[in-house]
Length: 138
Image (cartoon, one colour):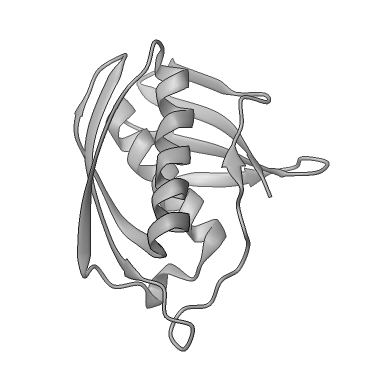
């Protein structure tokens, strides 16, 4: 199954993310985000971070998940290549993400992503496949 695909957007970057479960969709959204940022074939898993979030809706949770990953990336200079959702319900998430500290001589940064936005945000399940549309501010 396709993990994600880029979609046309006039100013920013749009992405459609898929998963057979909601947890897999969140994991694939993390992969999609960091594949926008860097060449993940060069990112090893040397450090782990736990991420725990609570929000009112699954859509809010998805945006917050992606923005929390960006926050950690920006403040700790970590690139993530491993995403494992341990617990997920409609309002809370616990996950473990893995990656390593950015090294200019090893990692190629492809794009600077500022934030996941609520613009055109959707999250649906149809015929057992979860799908989300997310637009990133770049």
